[in-house]
Image 1 (cartoon, one colour):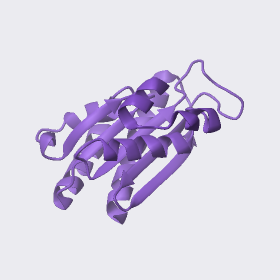
Image 2 (cartoon, one colour; image 1 turned 90 degrees about the vertical axis):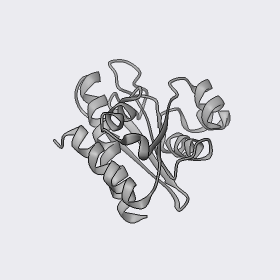
Image 3 (cartoon, helix red, strand yellow; image 1 turned 180 degrees about the vertical axis):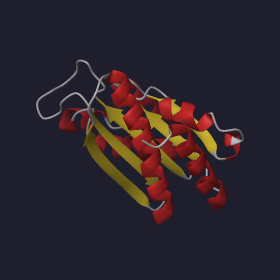
Image 4 (cartoon, one colour; image 1 turned 45 degrees about the horizontal axis):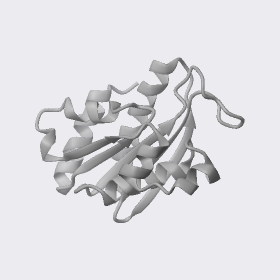
Length: 161
C-alpha cells in the first residue's frame, strides 16, 4: 500500500507544476484527504479548501447538490460524488476537486450497497470522472483505503488533464 503522505506530496508537486489549486468535498472520510494534503509543508500554495459535508443537507447547502439527486440515486452514488466534486469546483478557487461519499460501516449498508461501498468524483474545467469501489475491512480500513484511492485518482486525473 502506498503511503498516504507520499501520495499527498506527489499530488502537491503535480498541482504545483500546473499552477493549480485543489479543493476537497468529503463525506465518509471526514476530512481525511484534506488532513493528508495539509501534512505537506507548503500545501497552502496548492490546496484551497476542504468541505466536510457529512449530511445531505450540508451537501445541498455548501456544494449545491440538488436535493432530488439523493432521492433518485442515494447518497452513496456516482451521481452524488460527481455533484459534490462539481459543487466544490463552483464554490472555491480550485482548478481541480475530489469528492468521497460512502458507507464506512459498521452499519449503513443498503441493498446493492454493502459496507465498504465508496463513490469518488474528480472534477476540473475539462470534465468530471467518477468511480465506485467496495473496500474490505473495518471502518478505519475503509476510510484509509478511500483516502489513498482518492489521492491516486487525483494523480491519474492530473496526468490526463
